[in-house]
Amino acid sequence: MDKVVATALEAVADVPDGASLAVGGFGLSGVPNVLIKALYERGVGGLGVVSNNCGAMESGLAVLLSAGRIARVTGSYIGANKEFARQYLAGELEVELIPQGTLAERLRAGGAGIPAFYTPAGVGTQIAEGGLPWRYDGSGGVALASPPKEVREFDGTEYVLERGIRTDFALVRAAKGDRHGNLVFNKSSRNFNPLAAMAGRVTIAEVEELVEPGEIGPDAVHLPGIFVQRVVALTPEQATDKGIEQRTMSAPPGQGPVLVGAQAGNSEQALGTVST
Image (cartoon, rainbow, N blue to C red; front, side, top):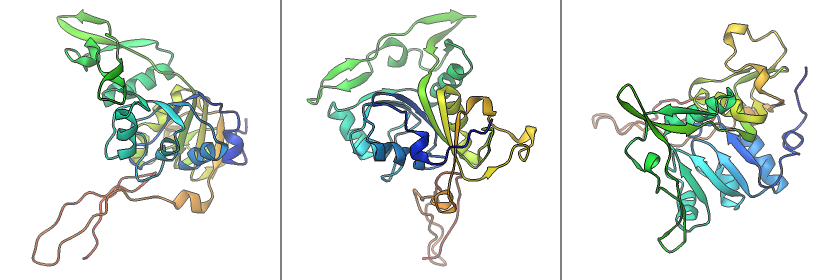
């Protein structure tokens, strides 16, 4: 089955207001920026987003967030996204913060048809006991708090029950994909993209390189096409448009190195140096 769709706008044409979305990406790596921009252009709003973070540097989900199109975020990291923090504290945005490993497993479990599972992560904290602020009232008070979760003992150790996540749609980005929807991810873009893709009832993948069926060896497939319903091939310009979150610098000779920490967007994390 050829799952290739001509444009990103066509691929997201049936995403309605209020839809739930699982969105891949880790920092700036593996973020489906083209599909997100297509949603922005369509004017879709009231979205419930499940993603590790909610965009950075005015890219990724930050495009929708800044436009007021997101109503709820389920994620594990706010980071340096000041607009995300502002909307959350002002009571404009509902936020469910989850331990990162638990979020990954909730997505995977949902995609695998597992309704719930037990994990030790969060036992003895508000994750299990409830009371985490999901929404503030804009005046420093909590308008909506998380409910308590079931805790059960197995072999002398307590575990908290977590629900699998399923969403209406999923948006992901892959380094390579074929017309059947088989996908390959590069480096840290593999952290959340396969899991987000599994969780979506309708999964849309933007791919940097589109190949014919059979060109990706079976052992090289990171995500089978059974989880993918639509594929959008990026232009060379879109495929190479990758931001850098932090630039790596080296000190002048004789002064020793300075802090190193650069992250290349979309397909990989990288370290490098430039002279000052």
